[in-house]
Image (cartoon, rainbow over all chains, first blue to last red; front, side, top):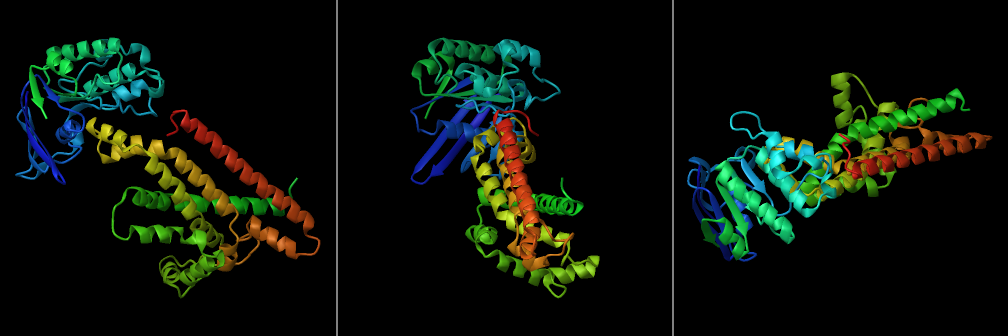
Length: 202
Length: 229
Protein backbone atom coordinates (compact mmCIF):
# COMPACT_ATOMS: atom_id res chain seq x y z
CA UNK A 1 0.00 0.00 0.00
CA UNK A 2 1.44 3.33 -0.96
CA UNK A 3 0.50 6.86 -1.95
CA UNK A 4 0.66 8.15 -5.47
CA UNK A 5 -0.61 11.68 -5.11
CA UNK A 6 -0.07 14.54 -7.49
CA UNK A 7 -2.59 17.30 -6.92
CA UNK A 8 -2.95 21.00 -7.43
CA UNK A 9 -5.37 23.72 -6.51
CA UNK A 10 -5.74 27.25 -7.86
CA UNK A 11 -6.98 29.93 -5.50
CA UNK A 12 -6.98 33.24 -7.28
CA UNK A 13 -3.35 34.22 -7.78
CA UNK A 14 -2.05 31.54 -5.42
CA UNK A 15 -1.64 27.91 -6.32
CA UNK A 16 -0.93 24.83 -4.26
CA UNK A 17 0.75 21.87 -5.87
CA UNK A 18 2.00 18.76 -4.17
CA UNK A 19 3.46 15.43 -5.18
CA UNK A 20 3.68 12.50 -2.77
CA UNK A 21 4.85 9.01 -3.63
CA UNK A 22 5.78 6.03 -1.50
CA UNK A 23 4.71 3.91 1.44
CA UNK A 24 5.15 4.24 5.19
CA UNK A 25 5.06 7.63 6.82
CA UNK A 26 5.41 10.74 4.70
CA UNK A 27 5.75 14.07 6.44
CA UNK A 28 4.27 17.13 4.77
CA UNK A 29 6.26 20.03 6.11
CA UNK A 30 5.89 23.73 5.65
CA UNK A 31 4.97 27.03 7.28
CA UNK A 32 1.44 27.84 8.40
CA UNK A 33 -0.81 28.90 5.56
CA UNK A 34 1.14 27.02 2.89
CA UNK A 35 -1.84 24.78 2.14
CA UNK A 36 -0.81 21.61 3.94
CA UNK A 37 -4.30 20.99 5.27
CA UNK A 38 -5.72 21.62 1.79
CA UNK A 39 -3.57 18.76 0.51
CA UNK A 40 -4.99 16.44 3.18
CA UNK A 41 -8.52 17.59 2.33
CA UNK A 42 -7.89 16.82 -1.34
CA UNK A 43 -6.64 13.32 -0.50
CA UNK A 44 -9.65 12.77 1.81
CA UNK A 45 -12.11 14.00 -0.82
CA UNK A 46 -13.36 17.02 1.15
CA UNK A 47 -12.21 19.39 -1.59
CA UNK A 48 -11.69 18.61 -5.25
CA UNK A 49 -8.27 19.32 -6.77
CA UNK A 50 -8.21 21.38 -9.96
CA UNK A 51 -5.81 18.95 -11.58
CA UNK A 52 -3.83 15.81 -10.87
CA UNK A 53 -4.70 12.45 -9.36
CA UNK A 54 -4.92 10.64 -6.02
CA UNK A 55 -4.13 6.92 -5.91
CA UNK A 56 -3.69 4.79 -2.81
CA UNK A 57 -2.55 1.18 -2.97
CA UNK A 58 -3.20 1.10 -6.69
CA UNK A 59 -6.81 2.29 -6.43
CA UNK A 60 -7.67 5.61 -7.99
CA UNK A 61 -9.69 7.90 -5.70
CA UNK A 62 -9.50 11.00 -7.89
CA UNK A 63 -8.41 11.63 -11.42
CA UNK A 64 -8.96 14.99 -13.10
CA UNK A 65 -8.29 13.43 -16.53
CA UNK A 66 -11.16 10.91 -16.33
CA UNK A 67 -13.40 12.98 -14.03
CA UNK A 68 -13.36 10.28 -11.34
CA UNK A 69 -13.96 11.77 -7.88
CA UNK A 70 -14.94 9.32 -5.13
CA UNK A 71 -16.98 10.91 -2.31
CA UNK A 72 -15.18 11.02 1.07
CA UNK A 73 -17.27 8.20 2.54
CA UNK A 74 -15.97 5.78 -0.10
CA UNK A 75 -12.28 6.66 0.21
CA UNK A 76 -11.69 5.00 3.60
CA UNK A 77 -9.41 7.71 4.88
CA UNK A 78 -8.49 7.63 8.55
CA UNK A 79 -8.46 11.40 8.96
CA UNK A 80 -7.37 12.86 12.32
CA UNK A 81 -8.17 16.55 12.07
CA UNK A 82 -6.17 19.30 13.73
CA UNK A 83 -9.07 19.93 16.09
CA UNK A 84 -10.35 16.57 17.32
CA UNK A 85 -13.82 17.13 15.80
CA UNK A 86 -15.44 14.63 18.16
CA UNK A 87 -19.23 14.52 17.94
CA UNK A 88 -20.32 16.55 20.99
CA UNK A 89 -23.67 14.77 21.33
CA UNK A 90 -22.15 11.28 21.50
CA UNK A 91 -20.15 9.71 24.29
CA UNK A 92 -16.58 8.59 23.67
CA UNK A 93 -17.74 5.02 23.01
CA UNK A 94 -20.24 6.10 20.33
CA UNK A 95 -17.63 8.41 18.80
CA UNK A 96 -15.15 5.53 18.57
CA UNK A 97 -17.67 3.22 16.95
CA UNK A 98 -19.15 5.78 14.53
CA UNK A 99 -17.20 4.54 11.54
CA UNK A 100 -16.53 1.01 12.76
CA UNK A 101 -16.54 -1.42 9.90
CA UNK A 102 -16.81 -5.17 10.12
CA UNK A 103 -15.23 -7.55 7.69
CA UNK A 104 -11.81 -8.50 6.46
CA UNK A 105 -8.95 -6.63 8.04
CA UNK A 106 -11.25 -4.85 10.46
CA UNK A 107 -9.43 -3.51 13.47
CA UNK A 108 -10.18 -5.12 16.82
CA UNK A 109 -12.12 -2.71 19.04
CA UNK A 110 -10.77 -3.85 22.41
CA UNK A 111 -7.21 -3.92 21.10
CA UNK A 112 -7.48 -0.37 19.78
CA UNK A 113 -8.99 0.86 23.05
CA UNK A 114 -6.13 -0.75 24.97
CA UNK A 115 -3.49 0.55 22.57
CA UNK A 116 -4.70 4.12 23.00
CA UNK A 117 -5.49 3.81 26.70
CA UNK A 118 -9.13 4.78 26.21
CA UNK A 119 -10.82 2.22 28.48
CA UNK A 120 -11.41 4.71 31.29
CA UNK A 121 -12.86 7.34 28.94
CA UNK A 122 -15.58 5.33 27.20
CA UNK A 123 -18.55 6.79 29.09
CA UNK A 124 -17.31 10.38 29.10
CA UNK A 125 -18.68 13.23 26.99
CA UNK A 126 -16.19 14.82 24.57
CA UNK A 127 -16.39 18.25 26.23
CA UNK A 128 -15.06 16.77 29.49
CA UNK A 129 -11.86 15.47 27.82
CA UNK A 130 -8.48 17.17 27.91
CA UNK A 131 -6.75 18.06 24.63
CA UNK A 132 -4.56 14.97 24.73
CA UNK A 133 -7.46 12.66 25.58
CA UNK A 134 -9.59 14.09 22.78
CA UNK A 135 -6.72 13.64 20.34
CA UNK A 136 -6.35 9.99 21.36
CA UNK A 137 -10.10 9.40 20.93
CA UNK A 138 -9.94 11.03 17.48
CA UNK A 139 -7.06 8.75 16.50
CA UNK A 140 -8.97 5.72 17.83
CA UNK A 141 -12.10 6.74 15.91
CA UNK A 142 -10.10 7.02 12.70
CA UNK A 143 -8.36 3.65 13.24
CA UNK A 144 -11.64 1.86 14.00
CA UNK A 145 -13.13 2.97 10.68
CA UNK A 146 -10.73 0.40 9.17
CA UNK A 147 -8.97 2.94 6.97
CA UNK A 148 -6.82 2.27 3.94
CA UNK A 149 -4.51 5.15 4.86
CA UNK A 150 -4.07 7.69 7.63
CA UNK A 151 -4.10 11.49 7.37
CA UNK A 152 -2.78 13.21 10.50
CA UNK A 153 -3.08 17.01 10.61
CA UNK A 154 -0.69 18.51 13.19
CA UNK A 155 -1.35 15.63 15.61
CA UNK A 156 1.05 17.08 18.21
CA UNK A 157 0.02 20.71 18.19
CA UNK A 158 -1.51 22.28 21.31
CA UNK A 159 -0.31 19.42 23.51
CA UNK A 160 2.04 19.77 26.47
CA UNK A 161 5.46 18.13 26.37
CA UNK A 162 4.44 14.86 28.10
CA UNK A 163 1.42 14.41 25.84
CA UNK A 164 3.45 15.18 22.73
CA UNK A 165 5.91 12.43 23.63
CA UNK A 166 3.03 10.04 24.26
CA UNK A 167 1.28 10.73 20.94
CA UNK A 168 4.58 10.77 19.03
CA UNK A 169 5.43 7.29 20.39
CA UNK A 170 1.94 6.16 19.45
CA UNK A 171 2.34 7.36 15.86
CA UNK A 172 5.65 5.53 15.61
CA UNK A 173 3.96 2.36 16.86
CA UNK A 174 1.13 2.76 14.31
CA UNK A 175 3.64 3.37 11.53
CA UNK A 176 5.53 0.16 12.37
CA UNK A 177 2.61 -2.07 13.37
CA UNK A 178 -0.15 -1.34 10.88
CA UNK A 179 1.72 -0.98 7.63
CA UNK A 180 -0.71 1.71 6.46
CA UNK A 181 0.54 4.61 4.41
CA UNK A 182 0.46 7.70 6.60
CA UNK A 183 0.50 11.34 5.56
CA UNK A 184 1.38 13.61 8.47
CA UNK A 185 1.27 17.39 8.40
CA UNK A 186 3.49 19.48 10.65
CA UNK A 187 5.20 22.86 10.79
CA UNK A 188 7.74 21.64 13.37
CA UNK A 189 11.08 20.58 11.85
CA UNK A 190 12.16 18.38 14.81
CA UNK A 191 8.89 16.51 14.62
CA UNK A 192 9.26 16.08 10.87
CA UNK A 193 12.79 14.74 11.15
CA UNK A 194 12.03 12.31 13.94
CA UNK A 195 8.94 10.76 12.34
CA UNK A 196 9.38 10.75 8.60
CA UNK A 197 11.71 8.80 6.43
CA UNK A 198 10.36 10.97 3.66
CA UNK A 199 9.74 14.68 4.01
CA UNK A 200 7.84 16.68 1.41
CA UNK A 201 8.21 20.43 1.76
CA UNK A 202 5.41 22.70 0.66
CA UNK B 1 -63.69 23.27 37.14
CA UNK B 2 -64.34 23.92 33.48
CA UNK B 3 -67.69 23.50 31.80
CA UNK B 4 -67.95 21.00 28.92
CA UNK B 5 -68.23 23.97 26.56
CA UNK B 6 -64.94 25.40 27.84
CA UNK B 7 -63.23 22.02 27.62
CA UNK B 8 -64.43 21.83 24.02
CA UNK B 9 -62.79 25.18 23.23
CA UNK B 10 -59.51 24.13 24.86
CA UNK B 11 -59.49 20.74 23.10
CA UNK B 12 -60.25 22.37 19.74
CA UNK B 13 -57.44 24.91 20.26
CA UNK B 14 -54.95 22.18 21.10
CA UNK B 15 -56.08 20.12 18.09
CA UNK B 16 -55.84 23.06 15.68
CA UNK B 17 -52.47 24.19 17.10
CA UNK B 18 -51.03 20.67 17.18
CA UNK B 19 -52.08 19.79 13.64
CA UNK B 20 -50.92 23.18 12.37
CA UNK B 21 -47.43 22.74 13.84
CA UNK B 22 -47.14 19.06 12.87
CA UNK B 23 -48.12 19.86 9.27
CA UNK B 24 -45.87 22.87 8.89
CA UNK B 25 -42.80 21.32 10.54
CA UNK B 26 -41.58 19.34 7.47
CA UNK B 27 -41.88 22.29 5.05
CA UNK B 28 -40.43 24.60 7.73
CA UNK B 29 -37.40 22.34 8.11
CA UNK B 30 -36.95 22.04 4.35
CA UNK B 31 -37.18 25.83 3.91
CA UNK B 32 -34.81 26.42 6.84
CA UNK B 33 -32.34 23.99 5.27
CA UNK B 34 -32.59 25.70 1.87
CA UNK B 35 -32.08 29.15 3.40
CA UNK B 36 -29.23 28.01 5.66
CA UNK B 37 -27.31 25.86 3.21
CA UNK B 38 -28.62 26.52 -0.29
CA UNK B 39 -26.98 28.76 -2.83
CA UNK B 40 -29.38 29.53 -5.63
CA UNK B 41 -30.76 32.54 -7.48
CA UNK B 42 -33.87 33.94 -5.85
CA UNK B 43 -32.84 33.01 -2.33
CA UNK B 44 -33.52 36.55 -1.12
CA UNK B 45 -36.98 36.39 -2.68
CA UNK B 46 -37.73 33.03 -1.03
CA UNK B 47 -36.54 34.42 2.30
CA UNK B 48 -38.90 37.39 1.91
CA UNK B 49 -41.85 35.19 0.88
CA UNK B 50 -41.35 32.93 3.91
CA UNK B 51 -41.40 35.94 6.22
CA UNK B 52 -44.43 37.55 4.59
CA UNK B 53 -47.05 36.19 7.06
CA UNK B 54 -45.01 37.75 9.87
CA UNK B 55 -45.31 41.29 8.51
CA UNK B 56 -48.48 41.36 6.39
CA UNK B 57 -51.65 42.17 8.37
CA UNK B 58 -53.15 38.80 9.41
CA UNK B 59 -56.46 39.87 7.86
CA UNK B 60 -54.72 40.04 4.48
CA UNK B 61 -53.21 36.59 4.95
CA UNK B 62 -56.67 35.27 5.85
CA UNK B 63 -58.20 36.89 2.79
CA UNK B 64 -55.52 35.46 0.50
CA UNK B 65 -56.14 32.00 2.00
CA UNK B 66 -59.85 32.52 1.38
CA UNK B 67 -59.18 33.33 -2.29
CA UNK B 68 -56.98 30.25 -2.67
CA UNK B 69 -59.24 27.80 -0.83
CA UNK B 70 -62.65 29.08 -1.97
CA UNK B 71 -64.56 26.57 -4.15
CA UNK B 72 -63.53 28.55 -7.23
CA UNK B 73 -59.99 29.22 -6.00
CA UNK B 74 -56.99 27.26 -7.33
CA UNK B 75 -56.47 25.04 -4.27
CA UNK B 76 -60.13 24.94 -3.25
CA UNK B 77 -61.24 23.74 -6.69
CA UNK B 78 -58.56 21.06 -6.67
CA UNK B 79 -59.56 19.82 -3.19
CA UNK B 80 -63.20 19.77 -4.28
CA UNK B 81 -62.50 17.84 -7.49
CA UNK B 82 -60.13 15.25 -6.05
CA UNK B 83 -61.32 14.74 -2.50
CA UNK B 84 -64.74 16.36 -2.45
CA UNK B 85 -63.83 18.39 0.62
CA UNK B 86 -63.71 22.04 1.53
CA UNK B 87 -61.79 23.55 4.43
CA UNK B 88 -63.98 26.63 4.71
CA UNK B 89 -65.73 26.97 8.09
CA UNK B 90 -63.94 23.77 9.17
CA UNK B 91 -61.29 23.17 11.86
CA UNK B 92 -58.93 22.04 9.08
CA UNK B 93 -59.13 25.56 7.66
CA UNK B 94 -58.34 27.00 11.09
CA UNK B 95 -55.30 24.69 11.24
CA UNK B 96 -54.15 25.88 7.78
CA UNK B 97 -54.39 29.53 8.86
CA UNK B 98 -52.54 28.80 12.12
CA UNK B 99 -49.88 26.78 10.28
CA UNK B 100 -49.23 29.53 7.73
CA UNK B 101 -48.90 32.12 10.50
CA UNK B 102 -46.58 29.86 12.53
CA UNK B 103 -44.35 28.93 9.59
CA UNK B 104 -42.02 31.99 9.56
CA UNK B 105 -41.26 31.69 13.28
CA UNK B 106 -40.45 27.99 12.89
CA UNK B 107 -38.25 28.59 9.83
CA UNK B 108 -36.32 31.33 11.65
CA UNK B 109 -35.58 29.22 14.72
CA UNK B 110 -34.65 26.09 12.75
CA UNK B 111 -32.55 28.03 10.25
CA UNK B 112 -30.49 29.58 13.05
CA UNK B 113 -29.82 26.19 14.59
CA UNK B 114 -28.82 24.63 11.25
CA UNK B 115 -26.45 27.54 10.65
CA UNK B 116 -25.01 26.87 14.10
CA UNK B 117 -24.06 23.27 13.29
CA UNK B 118 -20.30 22.97 12.77
CA UNK B 119 -19.95 21.67 9.21
CA UNK B 120 -16.51 20.34 10.05
CA UNK B 121 -18.28 17.69 12.15
CA UNK B 122 -20.24 16.66 9.05
CA UNK B 123 -16.96 16.40 7.15
CA UNK B 124 -15.58 14.19 9.92
CA UNK B 125 -18.64 11.95 9.62
CA UNK B 126 -18.16 11.70 5.85
CA UNK B 127 -14.50 10.64 6.15
CA UNK B 128 -15.64 7.99 8.67
CA UNK B 129 -17.77 6.40 5.97
CA UNK B 130 -21.14 8.09 6.47
CA UNK B 131 -22.94 9.13 3.31
CA UNK B 132 -24.82 12.43 3.08
CA UNK B 133 -28.01 11.00 4.54
CA UNK B 134 -26.36 9.24 7.51
CA UNK B 135 -24.28 12.30 8.23
CA UNK B 136 -27.45 14.41 8.22
CA UNK B 137 -29.38 11.96 10.39
CA UNK B 138 -26.66 11.31 12.98
CA UNK B 139 -24.86 14.66 13.14
CA UNK B 140 -26.76 17.61 11.64
CA UNK B 141 -30.23 16.71 12.86
CA UNK B 142 -29.38 15.92 16.51
CA UNK B 143 -27.16 18.99 16.77
CA UNK B 144 -29.89 21.27 15.40
CA UNK B 145 -32.57 19.68 17.58
CA UNK B 146 -32.68 22.41 20.27
CA UNK B 147 -33.55 24.91 17.52
CA UNK B 148 -36.18 22.61 16.07
CA UNK B 149 -37.78 22.26 19.50
CA UNK B 150 -37.67 26.02 20.01
CA UNK B 151 -39.28 26.45 16.59
CA UNK B 152 -42.02 23.95 17.37
CA UNK B 153 -42.87 25.63 20.68
CA UNK B 154 -42.82 29.13 19.20
CA UNK B 155 -44.95 27.92 16.31
CA UNK B 156 -47.39 26.19 18.65
CA UNK B 157 -47.74 29.28 20.81
CA UNK B 158 -48.30 31.39 17.71
CA UNK B 159 -50.87 28.90 16.40
CA UNK B 160 -52.77 28.95 19.71
CA UNK B 161 -52.94 32.74 19.57
CA UNK B 162 -53.93 32.99 15.91
CA UNK B 163 -56.89 35.32 15.45
CA UNK B 164 -56.96 37.66 12.44
CA UNK B 165 -56.21 35.22 9.63
CA UNK B 166 -58.46 32.55 11.14
CA UNK B 167 -61.56 34.71 11.58
CA UNK B 168 -61.15 36.14 8.06
CA UNK B 169 -60.54 32.77 6.44
CA UNK B 170 -62.91 30.38 8.23
CA UNK B 171 -65.03 32.70 10.42
CA UNK B 172 -65.99 31.88 14.01
CA UNK B 173 -68.00 28.66 14.07
CA UNK B 174 -68.36 27.44 17.68
CA UNK B 175 -67.01 23.90 18.03
CA UNK B 176 -65.42 23.99 14.59
CA UNK B 177 -63.25 27.11 14.18
CA UNK B 178 -63.93 28.74 17.56
CA UNK B 179 -60.44 28.45 19.11
CA UNK B 180 -59.51 30.24 22.36
CA UNK B 181 -58.85 33.73 20.93
CA UNK B 182 -62.01 33.62 18.81
CA UNK B 183 -64.09 32.35 21.73
CA UNK B 184 -62.68 35.08 23.96
CA UNK B 185 -63.52 37.71 21.36
CA UNK B 186 -67.06 36.33 21.01
CA UNK B 187 -67.52 36.28 24.80
CA UNK B 188 -66.37 39.91 24.98
CA UNK B 189 -69.15 40.84 22.57
CA UNK B 190 -71.75 39.03 24.67
CA UNK B 191 -73.40 40.87 27.60
CA UNK B 192 -72.49 39.11 30.85
CA UNK B 193 -69.64 37.19 29.24
CA UNK B 194 -66.92 38.66 31.49
CA UNK B 195 -66.61 35.55 33.66
CA UNK B 196 -66.05 33.36 30.61
CA UNK B 197 -63.51 35.83 29.21
CA UNK B 198 -61.56 35.72 32.46
CA UNK B 199 -61.48 31.93 32.58
CA UNK B 200 -60.55 31.50 28.91
CA UNK B 201 -57.85 34.18 29.18
CA UNK B 202 -56.46 32.39 32.22
CA UNK B 203 -56.33 29.12 30.30
CA UNK B 204 -54.53 30.84 27.40
CA UNK B 205 -51.84 32.20 29.69
CA UNK B 206 -51.48 28.83 31.43
CA UNK B 207 -51.11 26.91 28.15
CA UNK B 208 -48.47 29.29 26.83
CA UNK B 209 -46.56 29.12 30.09
CA UNK B 210 -46.56 25.31 30.12
CA UNK B 211 -45.32 25.22 26.51
CA UNK B 212 -42.48 27.65 27.20
CA UNK B 213 -41.32 25.84 30.34
CA UNK B 214 -41.46 22.48 28.58
CA UNK B 215 -39.35 23.78 25.71
CA UNK B 216 -36.81 25.25 28.14
CA UNK B 217 -36.47 21.92 29.96
CA UNK B 218 -36.11 19.95 26.73
CA UNK B 219 -33.56 22.41 25.36
CA UNK B 220 -31.51 22.14 28.56
CA UNK B 221 -31.61 18.38 28.34
CA UNK B 222 -30.40 18.55 24.75
CA UNK B 223 -27.75 21.10 25.74
CA UNK B 224 -26.29 18.69 28.27
CA UNK B 225 -25.42 16.41 25.40
CA UNK B 226 -27.94 13.70 26.20
CA UNK B 227 -29.46 11.63 23.45
CA UNK B 228 -32.76 13.18 22.59
CA UNK B 229 -33.22 11.30 19.34
